[in-house]
Length: 379
Image 1 (spheres, helix red, strand yellow):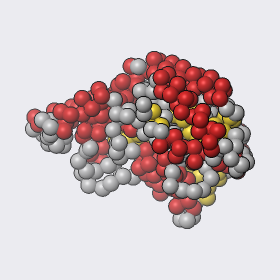
Image 2 (image 1 turned 180 degrees about the vertical axis):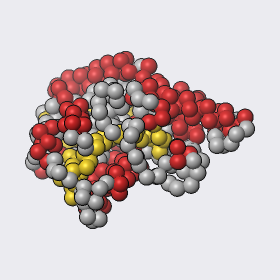
Image 3 (image 1 turned 90 degrees about the vertical axis):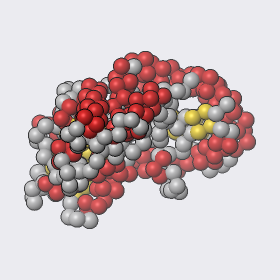
Image 4 (image 1 turned 120 degrees about the vertical axis):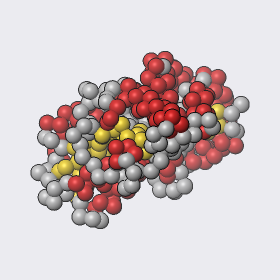
């Protein structure tokens, strides 16, 4: 039996999403910018997808822009806002636990005259909104804080942070990749100026994502050329990807309550099984954690060794972010939580999705038990 418990890295595409995409890979092949009937059929499909995304986020359709994924969305928004800021506004605030695409973008901007404050987190892995408030300066023009951390699953207090930035007229961006589709996120209530998401984290296709830009926020074009995406991102659209993204959002919206309940139940079963066979520490606070991610450190074990041994058994887990899987460096997220090197090296991330089951949990526990005895070492 194969077990895929690395859904925070990517998810299996829902069969319903594939079925929705196939016609746009075959008979519905027109260019959506064409005025004739072939193009308009495709344009209508894109419009439907935009509507489905907007419904999931509770925003207006014309605030949704399709991109190649959250990395592009994050990069473009932060760089564009920086370019458009006043010459006297040079300060950005981000958390220490952001995804690498945010941190690397900030490092790039630091080389071009901007200053960045990297706000710490507590041992629970959460940003304290008061630390954001204390970090604000007269020249602060942007705050970027993720919704759910990709390594620990910790839900960040984005609504409280949004209240702080909104009251002070400071832009707020949030990388919402790991939270959207699993947790409620209402853009009518949460006053963020921009959010990013990727289809492949919610059982959609890879290579397509969204940048939500609230009305009134001005950005430079992503790509210059034609009038696609209201002139912000020129070039013929990734039509099958956009169609798949829209269908994934429709399913996520309509099945959100059942999906959440199933994820929560699976996590509870896993924790119960783990408690019977080993000593472990949860990296984060279960009460503030998304239902789809569990990061634990196993006493006396190296996480990368265990992840590899499980892989040979046909079981997929992670010992960090997929984007940094080839790096030997310690997790910057767990380091920010002030954990010891031993605890960080013993960490694995287990993440669930729509196709995860209790049978998989039972199989995982049965295969893990003998490996614990085999690979327990001093680290």
